[in-house]
Amino acid sequence: MKRILVAGVSGAIGGALAEAILERDEESVVVGLCRDPGKVPEPLRNQSRMTLLTWNAEDDQSPDSVARGLGKILPASEGIDTFIYAAGLLHDSDMFPEKRLEELKAESLSRAFAVNASGFAILVQALLPWLRHREFKRIVAISAKVGSIEDNRMGGWYAYRSSKAALNMLVRTLAVELPRRCKSVACVSLHPGTTDSALSDPFKQSLAQLQVHSADDTAKNLLAVIEGIMPEDNGRFLSWDGSQLPW
Ligand SMILES: NC(=O)c1ccc[n+]([C@@H]2O[C@H](COP(=O)([O-])OP(=O)(O)OC[C@H]3O[C@@H](n4cnc5c(N)ncnc54)[C@H](OP(=O)(O)O)[C@@H]3O)[C@@H](O)[C@H]2O)c1
Image (cartoon, rainbow, N blue to C red; front, top):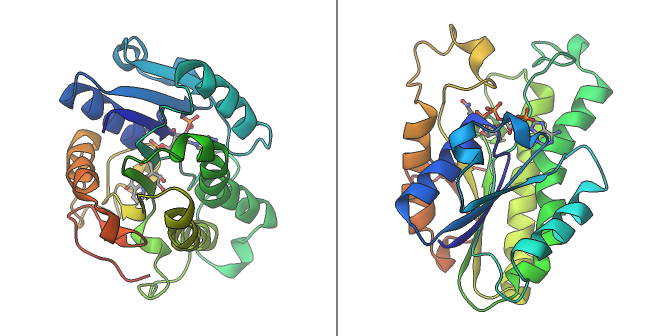
């Protein structure tokens, strides 16, 4: 992994992944995408092998501006070998995971789909010129186990669950098309495991019985899985420990 693009680099998991990648290989260069580069912690922001580009999954113009910005840093002919989508939206000041049907809002569904699902596929579309080279490429969508349709026994969290299920379907669909157009490639969904972050923070108490990882530990776990991804893993839904999850 030498030329990596991480979307959602201002987040706990995206930031820790970028840091771990840069630390692990001194030849690696990382391009980080986020809404506000000023939010990225200073040591990472000041890393000489790190470039930040502004990107908002809820803004239709953003993918084009990412492609323009990326073109100035990495020529498409050089390409990228790893794309990690680590952006995600579960709650913010205007939305919170629904406990019951009456709490469901069209606006929350639409925002969750924009950040958790469409943002990923539209970026892959914008990145196609960087994915055409012959080296093996890994395209990794950080998904969530709660997006598994088969595993849904609890209900609730309509917007988040359904948008992560949509992300998983986008991964499977890309996994059919990309090998024909960007050989060789593996496109996978990856559940990071419960991780201490702004996203999980409101649920700390209810998560107490679960194993909660620090973002740094999650980054180590995920990198071990990502580095092990081979062409034959294309289209799989993997967990942080490398095990396979049901769709
Ligand atoms: N933490 C967990 O326990 C857990 C469990 C399962 C799955 N996940 C998944 O792991 C991924 C990373 O989550 P995290 O725990 O690191 O959460 P986090 O710290 O809250 O990071 C979320 C990231 O998504 C970005 N984001 C939100 N809305 C955006 C938008 N409109 N456009 C662009 N970026 C946007 C945030 O950007 P800003 O900094 O600008 O807000 C931030 O970079 C997410 O996909 C999440 O669903 C997390």
